[in-house]
Length: 180
Image 1 (cartoon, rainbow, N blue to C red):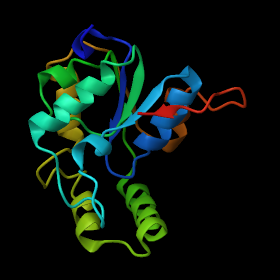
Image 2 (image 1 turned 90 degrees about the vertical axis):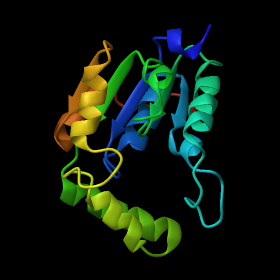
Image 3 (image 1 turned 180 degrees about the horizontal axis):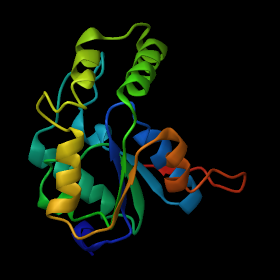
Image 4 (image 1 turned 30 degrees about the vertical axis):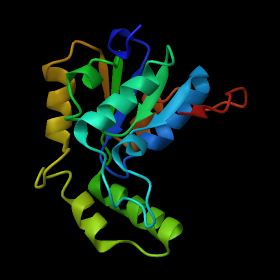
């Protein structure tokens, strides 16, 4: 069965630093399903990372192939603009909105932890998310994509405190998700 026909896949999307990976990993563990990072399909491996992008058709093909191997998966990140087949591969969409101050603080801490210093170009790119002042994803574009051409249910999480309402919580009985 093609990935497009599967309704068991969930997309967790939002701005950089909003918590999409954290929520997707926890949800996948709770559901005992595969966890997929969209960035793994967007960026080619490199050192330093995030230097070379896969072409649009190649990343879509790679992601659909992965999703086609499993009945249910939770995908973290943005797949906006990856094509109709990718957008239709999800039966559910969870959109996380986190205030810009919190997002940017998380990103700065993550950058320092991973790379020893925050990369100014990346932080400038991420800061433009909320205002929609740059190419790529923004809250308005993500909401339009999830509502406009889609009939699948979606949930918006607006505050950190509300995220627990969207998150099916971690429990000691949750299994480790297998990352595809």
